[in-house]
Image (tube, rainbow, N blue to C red; front, side, top):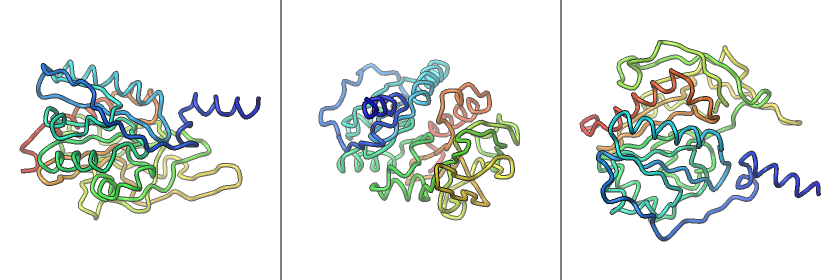
Length: 274
């Protein structure tokens, strides 16, 4: 009974595939509507590792609203077979909404890479930057840019001050220079600032407790320079990653909504990286 209860609990908090990771890749693509409004956005939220249940649900709802407000087509799927040249050609932006684990086959990874480098736009949220993607070296090196170390524990969610680094970027122009945000803050082995990435937002480590404390394990997660949102050009394509968005309440934040709206405007601008 104890074991079954623990397994049910793990499923309820999204940890099932963290305990039992999967590498299943779909072979038959979903039916994408032929009359999808253009430009169109693909929201992908497959999880072969930890599943951020509330973050995925709230993120999907937010992007539905954003698409309606901006007159965009939108299609949601967790079917990895959508990553083929024909289907990807119908989308201007792909969003990895808390995608975790080994979610794409080698051919699907290559289709996505070629699509992005040829002028697509990619937005990665929170779990899309954790260590469950380590087998896909191009993704880690090109879109994330650093190795995930851990996230804070003790407590797991803390309010901290977020600072705007690049006030000129379109994704930042409606934001205040600093604001408070409650999050499960990630840390990486190094800052991406000097690796060809443009840092948009950083978190002030003096405004929260940047440590991992769980059972007998202790780890100092301070980075000094601690980016949490960054972007870059990939060929003629555009990528932007946000470490925020673990829980659903992140999408209730006025500032985070403004960030994602601005991010979408930049990702849809096909001239931004030409």
